[in-house]
Amino acid sequence: MKLKPVKKIPSSNRGQTNNRVVPLYVWIPREVDKELRRAIVQKYGEFRRGLLSLEVTLALRAWLGAQKTSLTQMPFRVSQRLPQYYGVWLEVKDCIEKRFNIRLESGQEYPLSLLKKAIMIVRGGDPRTIKKWINHFVELGLIELKDKDFWEFKDFSIKTKKCRFLGGKG
Image (cartoon, rainbow, N blue to C red; front, top):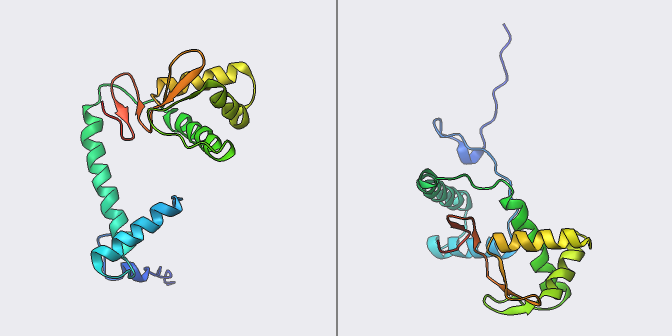
């Protein structure tokens, strides 16, 4: 009779038979990482093994709890393209801030030509593409067209017809 090899339990999970842990690999901005680690040191007095996992787990559980209540109250489905559109917006915003050295501030008006140039750099120069992305940004509530030559930056509120996401007020 052959015995099966026993899998090693990670040291952080030893002694926990009911709660299995799995690795979660994510990419987050460096400043968020630094802020999280500072907060852990502030809360516990030191940064030691397991505290980062504990705090991330607590944050994810809180987020999941909030999602359960908000998603059950939504009478519609959120567009599956929302993350793609928002990702393109972040690329366009980053292009404006880094390439043109202009800091976007909520409520400020900017020339439409600036937005078109940034979209051209990020997504291509076809006029239909530029028009499409401007329309998506307007629909999501990221920008507001003021007239034919200016647009207003609306911060990070993403909205649909019935509610807003990512920090917006609905």
